[in-house]
Image 1 (cartoon, each protein chain N blue to C red):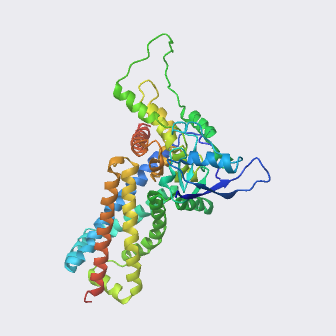
Image 2 (cartoon, rainbow over the protein chains, first blue to last red; image 1 turned 45 degrees about the vertical axis):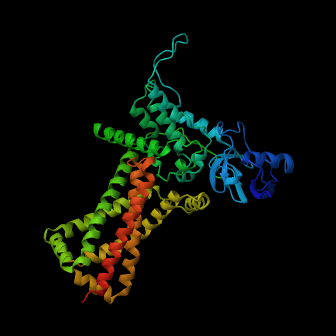
Image 3 (cartoon, rainbow over the protein chains, first blue to last red; image 1 turned 60 degrees about the horizontal axis):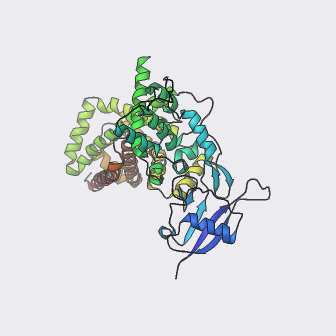
Length: 245
Length: 219
């Protein structure tokens, strides 16, 4: 006989003045290859149509379904119930604005992040739409792609002790974003320019090295290596700027 | 849920000293780790023979290193506290947040940070008491230490508590420096944890052996 799974789900609708934050339990029979994405859809279809949660791709690509699963931020679509105990607690990701129940607004947070880190190629070259794209070595393209795989699900920030204590912290996603442009030869920004963005306690020097970001990232981004590399790089820039004055 | 904002503030400006303070935090911590290991070997030498410990202590006193170096280490200790305290939450609200966060996350490295912060506070008080007690009553000798520990079991218990706290704090600090500054990457993390655990166990072992030696030493 299949397991009966009990789901304790956070419920709260900030738009409804009558609503108060509380936990609500649902029971479902486990099926083969069941993911939390399937669970949430079944609960919504069969038990409570008012349940709010985000999803889009079902395949760990869009980053919409990030939530706290038994204490750990993760993607609902990536999480199989067979890897979880009989009782499962689902909470919305902290840090981000709550839309309702398990749905949070990561979009606004990341939008502000793009503005802060100026998340685009800075170049003085005029764009010629008829020209061939500038060539780069395969190894360079791969290195950039490796850092560009982030799906911005927000799990790293939700798992970060620093981000929980200071809302102006850029988090691993933001710092990694800077690292991605730093190695891109098309971006003409200097180390000093990047230092202006992350060479402070809101950026890399605010990171306390708890590495929850590294451990929860559903895409297994190389966050530990990236944070170490950028701390050394920005640390050296800090010394250079100090002694050059 | 926590704050809905904002990775950026309009007033976000380069805080030029943040980087230098981070260097200072790391270097002061690394300096204290090296000092504590040297200290452990000095005190631990009593296990081999009180004569060796006395000879080392005498060398430090005759060269003035204990009289000058001791207070300098105390200053470094205070400086390290002030630097690292920039990251420790002192307001109850933030303490509650990080505590709830750690409890929810079930994540070893997050708990290690909580332990690092809590041991820091205890070491600040107990370490200050220890340094005051020793430096205000030079010279250091094995017989004197043994007499104090045997006659006042409170001091024995004090050091029995302080020793593991210091070495655990040191071990987590060493691990954290290697991780934060990228000296150990993803591939080395597990091995680093094992090595640091071994260092902590050996250090606590040597220190406890030294305490036992003092306890049973003929005064």
